[in-house]
Image (tube, rainbow over all chains, first blue to last red; front, side):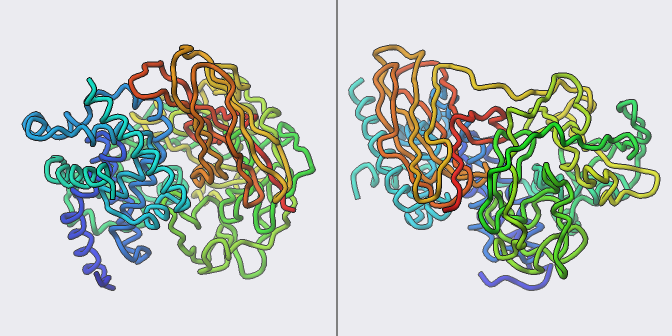
Length: 168
Length: 416
């Protein structure tokens, strides 16, 4: 999208991204931080912090910038989450509501949300955001090889997780 | 593409349809300030100088979008007496464009003590790499070699060191040049308190300062409980109270506490107090969190060597896992990261399977690619369906959420 030079033009683009991409970025934030309220607050703060930079012309492409801000914000909380995640019950059931969970069981998504934060991040960025390995690596500031290894470990965990549930 | 990958794509597509979240509320977006120390550094002077007042949080998108990007701009003045320390002379309450009330307490300049550098004995055998400079905030266990742009002000041995900007460059106070949180590098225009080559991106704007620096030993910093000692001032990071050198206040140096304060005549430096979310009491009366030595717990670790020369050192960590059932299986992950903490994405992540308590070692180890401090973080994750209680992560990485990093997990790598 060409970036307008004028303040009013930039305002229009910003508002359009807020309308068009706000929900999707909040969903991304949810997949990374696993809490609806936190995701909505986090996304709002991402937009809030982006606005002055966008207004000053310091941001070229708003959506990747917002994605980067959201990922960085989530990274700060991951260490604390490492302790709490194993006690999170039935995350996916909560997130889609009772009606949807009857129509479709989100066992796999539930397992994704229980992954360790770093593994969850690569899975979400690769398969939810559908980013390439290179883009995922760039977004997380890690090597492409690290992305591959984390994805591999995550998929192994997800497989065993699903197999464990089917055995029950 | 494997079956599990195909199913991931399908389920995530379904999730996009069925995950009922709303996008950010425009009012909330533009009523929320970016809450961080960066915001504090950038805007404190503006807040002090600005006319205090109120900006309605419900003015809506169109109005909010027109506010200046430099920070909140109060529009009306509402002086209100408020609880404040004894030294407080004037107080005022302002409602910023945020959901959090912010109280600014102004204290007289004369009451601020000079920093006592004798409290920070330093060894003299450490050298930062070319273009990097040593920095060690008081609430971190280990110092860091950082690009000059990240310096806040002063060093232990020479608090005015970074005032020596070369001709054509200026001094900065605060991490304003490289936006470390978002990874965005922006140019800083020349001006007062800005030490940079105008327009230059990091790290090319680093100044050719001496690479000689000193390491501040965390163990030598004694912060007693109670009020901050002379030379320190109360600081708060993510809810953890610590004492920080006076230099880190937005303005002033140890030699000249009133330098660069940009305070109007008759007023002085300020403490920003965020009620309801961060600080809840007056500054100066907090119990200080002193540095504590690492204690043996269910997970402990040590990395070797503690120091080495770039190209000739491989970091290897060994973890001791205790306090888990003998039959429990899981894995230990060893992350090796460069600092500072907010650049600390692991350069290496190795995992070993575990079977109950025992001593486990990194399979390969990691050879750092640059000089500086390298930090090891060890996580324990029990296998799914095994219900061990929380096992705290151990890490040498100083961070706001890790106020007592383990010095046994830090390796200092010097340039070859």
